[in-house]
Amino acid sequence: MGAASAPPEPNQALLFAAFPFGRTQLRNRLVMAPMTRRHSPGGVPGADVAAYYARRARGGIGLIVTEGTTIDHPAANGYPDVPRLYGADALAGWARVVEAVHAEGAAIIPQLWHVGNVRRCGIEPDPAVPGMGPVDIVEQGETVVRGMTEDDIAAVVDAYARAALDAWSVGFDGIEIHGAHGYLLDSFIWTKTNTRADRYGGPVENRVRFAVETVAAIRRAVGPDFPIVFRFSQWKSGAYDARIADTPEELGAILRPLAQAGVDIFHASTRRFWEPAFAGSGLTLAAWAQRLTGKPAILVGSVGLDRIHETRALRNAENTTVATAGIDRLLEIVADQRIALVALGRALLADAEWANKVAAGRQDAIRGLVPADLEVLT
Image: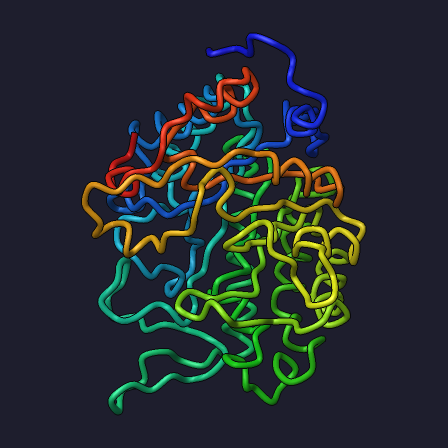
């Protein structure tokens, strides 16, 4: 299993301390971040998906957050071959994934996903269904995204709750709600995409209402001891300078109602984990989430990599390797800002044994990322 050959250094031990997580306990503070892989034809995760996640669990990660899994709503999906979290076939596939991960000593939660404005007609499961979002979007005279009615919103809230209950039923250890990167719930929070004038638009308490109702419905469905993680971000896909909050006070007005509704952990998605969230403060977005809500948070963003590469550009780059980065800066931030959990994404695509190698003091043996790692499920 690649067990550590020596106890971790004192600062490094911060990453390898146990962490309470609902009805279980994480063996360490390291999390596999959700990454869309598109290897589930028909929405069903197969044996290759189970082996992929089990390999990261065997590599020493404490908690795995799966790739985005679509909920049971006609407009939830925006991409081919992504997994779903409904239907007997998909749930049976996920049960096998959960069993494989648990056998390797890690916990696992699915990321519940509705893509919102991203969807266009022509995408599975029903190509005739357009996208749905806060308001109509018209392209070349055609309505490609339909503004949601309150009945539409209620139906999506119910679908999230059903997905969470299904996750519980197949043995997952909790769930993560995807509320980031411009997808549905985030598009209601962000003022640029939400120009509604009803009780789901306008002031922040209205814009966060959809997400709050979703969290509350999930909490009612699964009870008090099934962790709810909420992933949020400032940046959006294709809009890296976007912000849902310009000040800590604005961020608190978004996150506190979510915490009160039942969020246990906030997953603060950033592209560079070391960057301060707001001018005048050195605190990261994860640290601010913890300070504002009293809830633990997950730090993420290029952990383990020496520089930023846009994923699309890297896919087209030949003979390119993104080198690994040391963890001294990470450990300093974790210690100084008392960060609860740390997530890795692409570094784990490059080397499934990242956690075991760090624990063993073998960072020089960690493999760098190459373009093929983004395409192949290994």
